[in-house]
Length: 208
Picture 1 (cartoon, one colour):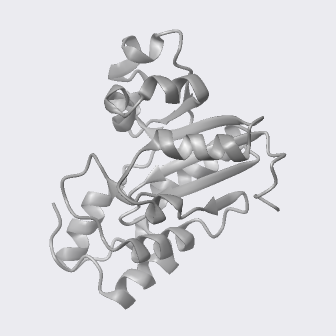
Picture 2 (spheres, one colour):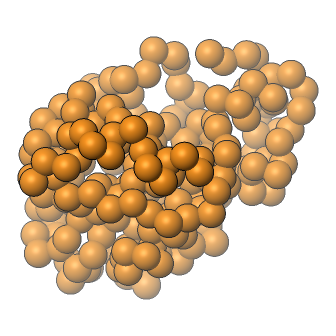
């Protein structure tokens, strides 16, 4: 499938550190593609994450792992523009770039419930909300009625959809911690990502 065609009408954007990418990310992508009837889902490893206090793993490694993690999804294109962009990574800049390329498309921004709670802290979040629908994944059963349910997302200018997806209690922080202690959580990683981590000796030192 040609994912570069300007004729794409329903496009998903899925950004994140992907440090490392895991089965929860894959489940979210698959659920979003099906439920939102996406023509394409662009997965965007972040460059310089403005909201993270820890140092991320080298961008080349995160990009390579992300490509391996989503290799089974034909509608996914891993896009490295945020890694190549100088300075902090902001979703509004990425969204504007995509809108310039696909001016007639409808955009959906994928995020977890934890990210949704922090959405009003994002740079120019009102502009993001005016130009895209937020597709929010629940991480645990209680997220069916999330804490933000009576908050900002009920404002008329914010379009929000809650994705119905398999329960995946997977955390990149937990994965890094387990690897640093000598345990490879193969149940949470695709075989190719697990092999890449072992080959390049990633996460052997503890990360916050």
